Amino acid sequence: MVPFGNKQRVKIYILPGIYREKVIVPERKPYISFVGNENEMSNTIISWDDKASDVDCDGRELGTYRSASVTILSDYFCATEITFENTIVAAPGGAGMQAVALRIVGDKAMFYRVKVVGSQDTLLDETGSHYFYQSHIQGSVDFIFGRSRSLYQDCVVQSTAINFGAVAAHHRNFPDENTGFSTVVFGEFECRGNGANTTLRVPWSKKFSYEEAKPFMDLKFIDGEEWLRL
Image (cartoon, rainbow, N blue to C red; front, side):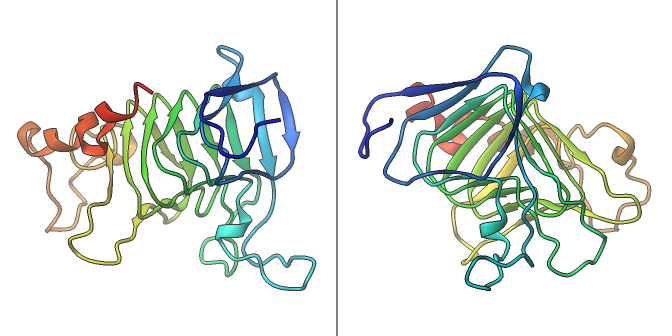
């Protein structure tokens, strides 16, 4: 058992399998790592199927935030070779179909070779600074959202939308808030894949030069040089 107020890294090894459960890492239990077997990311799955319109035991709707299959409230969380999944499939425009696979509230979290799979509102990158490296995020509508300051490096961001959808929905309470999502393969810098054709873009879209994109492609964007080595 991980004690409250833990100050040392605790690694929880997770063998391949499908784990049908909701998981919450409490705020007062930092420095926890979920570690799957090497190259078993797609076979090591934490999965649930709540959606925003579902009700709890008191008859109250869960809402988007409480629909999460896995919720990380603590700081310095790490995960590798794990799939976080919500199996709800959202109908385009369907009310109450928000279904979060992974919600991150704690600060300074790192995800290496993980997969986050869902449909609408897959990854709630809520608050804090986070680093995703060589990971896969999949969804259809607003499937990366929140108001954190995060770097997605060498990641696959896969849209499963058929007719229409949206990748990201970042939120700021104030215009000068120091938050944002930074990705290397998502955006208008060196995009690739079926959606990279810019001929049908809106007139005000822009492709960034390397110099314009450079500040968002470095660990300094999330102050990572101060905490990723911990």
